[in-house]
Each structure stands twice: as C-alpha cells, then as structure tokens.
Image (cartoon, rainbow, N blue to C red; front, side, top):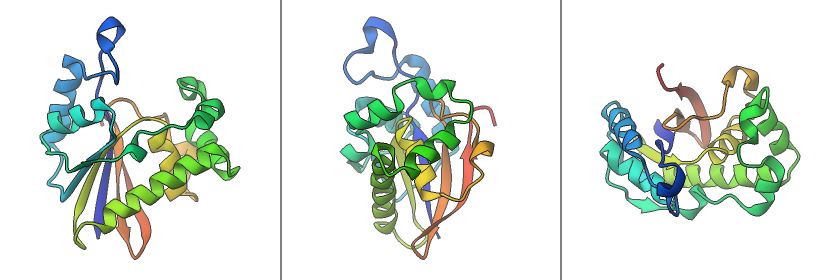
Length: 185
C-alpha cells in the first residue's frame, strides 16, 4: 500500500522579520528537525511554492523533489468563504470544513484540487512507496474532508497547528487508514 504523510509547515517568523512568504523562525527549524527524525524514508517529497514549506522539508532532513503551486494556492473565493484565522474560533472546525465542501463552492473546489494532487503524487511512487507533502492550514483540512467524506469529523479536533498532520494509505484508488500526527502526541 502506498502511504502519504502530509504536514503543515513549521513555525514562522513574526512581525517585521516575517518577510514575503514568512520564512521559518529558529523555533520552526528546531521543530522541523525534531519532526524529521521520526519520518521517512520517502520516495517523493513535495512542497508548495511558498518558502516556509520548502524550508520545513529541508529542515526535516528531506531533499525536495518538486514544488507544486496547488499545495499552497488559496483562491480569493476560498478566503471569502472561510477567512484566514476564523477556523480557530469554529466550535467544530472539521465539521464546518465538511459542510462547506458539501456545498460545492470554493472550499469544495479547494478540497478536490488537493485530492487530485495527492492522488497524482501517490500514483507516481512504487506500489509500497511513500510520499511526504508539506503544505498549509486550510488547504490540508479541505483536502482531508474531501478524501474522507464519511468520517467522524467532530472527533478530528482542532485545525492543524504548525508541524502537525496526518498519514494515510492509498490502495486500489481509495484513501484509507487515516492516522493523526499531533504535536506532543
């Protein structure tokens, strides 16, 4: 079975030091190094084209094979639908992501783009291969509710913190065996 590990980028700089694309902070580099010690090996490593995801993968100890814009692209209509930090105030964030995805609107399209990208990546590796994707909040949540539409969303908890993610399998064209990777767990 093929495996996909998806992680949100590590901690970024704040304030004036943030810069365009918000680079990793020293704390983020330490966090990514720690995460990377428990991961791999991978047959394919992908990040978005936004610097913090590339920096996270490199600090984890993995050479990046490709950068895909789709892994970091949040269209304007998604911003209008879900906002930026609003998801942190949602009582049941994954329930809300699933509800929005079910409407067929902007979040649904974002989720479908992630599902297609993840499937493409998984189908590019050997039958027992593994893929690492370093991506972003909102993008990951929309993709997961799309790939696992019949899940117990209230049990999924909060949106992804920096460095958090999931691992799941892919077999016979289906996503399966979802495992959470939460900080401190």
